[in-house]
Amino acid sequence: MSDPDSISSSRPTLPHSNEHITLIGLGAIGISFLALHLTYGSAPVSVYDPRPDLQEHISSVLPLYLSSDTSTPSISTLLSTKRLIIHTSLTSAVANATIIQEQGPESLSFKQKTWSDVLQHAKPTAHLWSSTSGIPASQQLSHLSSEDPARKRLLVVHPFNPPHIMPLLELVPSPQTSPSELEHAKAYFSALNSGHRPITIHKESAGFVANRLSFILFREACHLVNEGVASVEEIDEIVRASLGPRWAVAGPFKMYGFGGGPKGMAGFLGNIGEAIDGVWKDAGRITMDEEGWKRKVIDQTNEAYGLPGAEDIKKRDRGLRAVVKAQEEMEREAKAEREEA
Image (tube, rainbow, N blue to C red; front, side, top):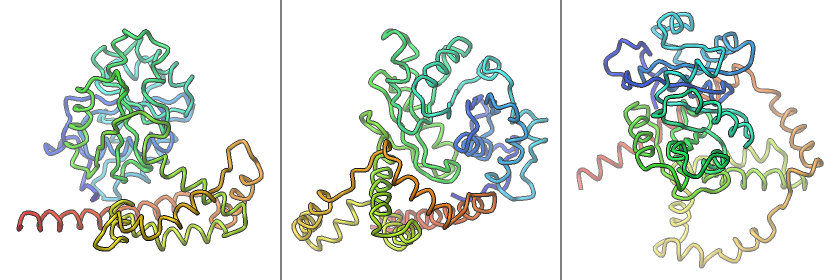
């Protein structure tokens, strides 16, 4: 996913001039999505967050997520040209929106109240997106009548952090979500030409897919720290030196298929299935209700890395861009080979 030369709304190559995006919640995910919409699209973006220092917050954080190219407009230019519109009320923020995307706290009651407020003031045709990390769309609108048409419009658009760089977008409909909402979201992100990969998740589940996989690995990592098997820093390096490069090339099923040689996955499961089963049975069972392991993980993480600052974010993003660029090159090579075959 390459950096754009500019995010000027006058460039005819930028799509979605017919849209008006509203972002609710400008934390890390919200700011990152703001950068994505501003960089690759031409739609005006309205933003709302109840924090009193919203403009100062955006002015200090958004530049970390935008291209460093000298042609990139400043925050003041984005504001003066109304590419970016900061609102002090939810009512005004959603009034003209064609797409309303919320990135609020991971609280069911918060999301239900937010959508109730949104639906009072938004257009009845507005597309509703939630970038929740794990609360299904059906739960977010479960307080509404089963016949309420809003149920057909809500779609989970779950990114992997930071969404302005990471290609994955999990599109998770509820059983009531209209298929047209899925198609609209796919068309929107495909037209951005940003390298994002929208993938439809076929059934609602807590955490969807990417977070389920990530959180299970994280639980085992925390368990190993708690048991003194390895430190936070050592486990990070183990992942960077093994699973990170491997899974950047291909996912677990394809990669473990290589482990079975000519018999593929059947050979892999046959060869080391007993070892896998032993690890599964020995896996940690720590929970968020326990405090002991949390203190160890927090203290070791802070000691190893400190708290993340602006330079850390820039360094992270440079690394992620390099990995995504390598993936894109691999995809181009694979496509060329297919076309030649």
